[in-house]
Length: 155
Image: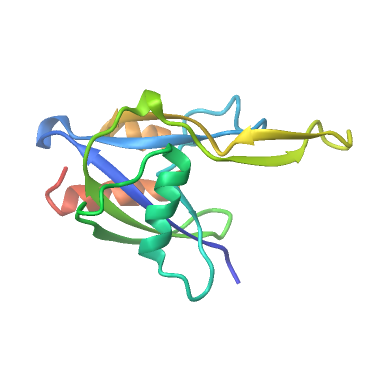
């Protein structure tokens, strides 16, 4: 079965200046990748777990700040990424200081076959992007979430 993730596309600003918050994956494999490598804050969830609750949890884990409990979440549907992972997302209007983001970490053997284990942040940075620039930064499949945000009239 394909892995599944849930995430939140945070957006702010008016129709002409709409911006979305994206995160860049941490770790050595992503260090030199930029355009086409960013993502919405998201993470995997298990069978029987509420995807909406997982999206809120992953938002907090990746950014170090919780989405307010009263934030209205509007479903943006699901996409299938190139690697087969299915991602379901919700849009939420809000603002936060992207420069203050601090992520949870993961551990992996690095360099490969060295026997050494190193810890890396799950995301190494977060940034606000205008919609046009966000389309260039996002993993290609996730750009559909921007289309859906605009179709709803939020963009």
